[in-house]
Every structure is written in C-alpha cells, then in structure tokens.
Image (cartoon, rainbow, N blue to C red; front, side):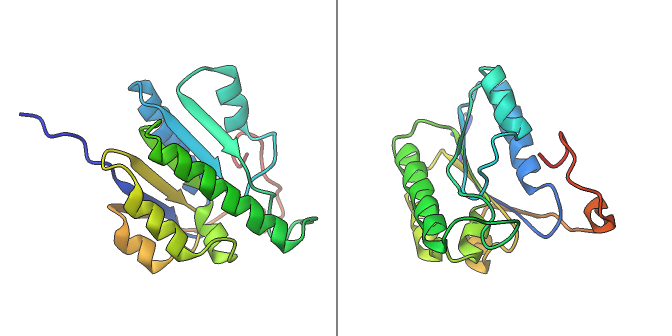
Length: 179
C-alpha cells in the first residue's frame, strides 16, 4: 500500500546565489508531474525576471505573484519602510488565503526570509502559517538568513554558500542567470 504524500516544509537559505533558482527548478519539476504551483515574491517587483516571462508564455501550472516593493533600504529604494511592511503583510495574507483554500500542491514564499530579516513580517506570523498549512502541501521558503526556528520546523534545509560570484569583480547581473 502506497503512503499518502506528506507535504514538506523546505528552506533554501545561505549567502550564495541560487536559492530562488532551486525553488524554481523544483516548481518546474513538479509542474512536469501535473502539480499546481504558486510562487509569491515578497521582495521582488522587477517585471523583467525570466521566470515571469516564462509563466506568461507557457501555461504550465505555475503562477507567480510579485507583491514586493523591491529591495528594502538598498539599490535606490524609493519607498518608505511602511510601504514595504504593507506589501509583505499583503503577500503573506494572499499566500495564506491560497494555502488554506488548498488550491496548490506547492507554494513558494520567495525571499520571505529577507522579509523576516528586514522586520517586514514577524517570525510568529510565518510559524503560524507553517502550522496551518494542509498536511499534503509542500511549502518552500527562500532567502538568506533564515531564522533558526524555521530551520528547526523544516523537513528539508539546503544552504547555498557563496564561494565565488562575478558581482564581486564588478560584473553586473546577467539576464537569464540572475534574473
């Protein structure tokens, strides 16, 4: 007798490039098996990301919702801190509604660890969401500096370590690699 699938809590963290990329790869793999995936972007608001273009072009079972206002207090941030908080809380509310409605097999909370680190959300809000998720749902949390509590709650944790990156040599982000 085959056991029913258990939904994992998965954390991709660390200071290296590839956390969102790992989650996107998982989403693509799951979509190939007919799964429905939602990716909620908590920080990103750039409309030129390759993943956004891909899901618009191909009906593949992946939906991406960019709710963030962009980088917080860096890279020319034009928004007051309160706007970032409002966007992050809106993203969490949207994700929670979709999760509790059981519309998806996998939900990726992209850069939610950054939202926590920047104090846009409280750890308690995210922990409550983890405890409320349906048993079969896979919940993926990405972003550097994941809190220890999330690492403890997770079923799978991968750390992406920065060993070498062209950005350190002044080479800008490359289309198709970083975005």
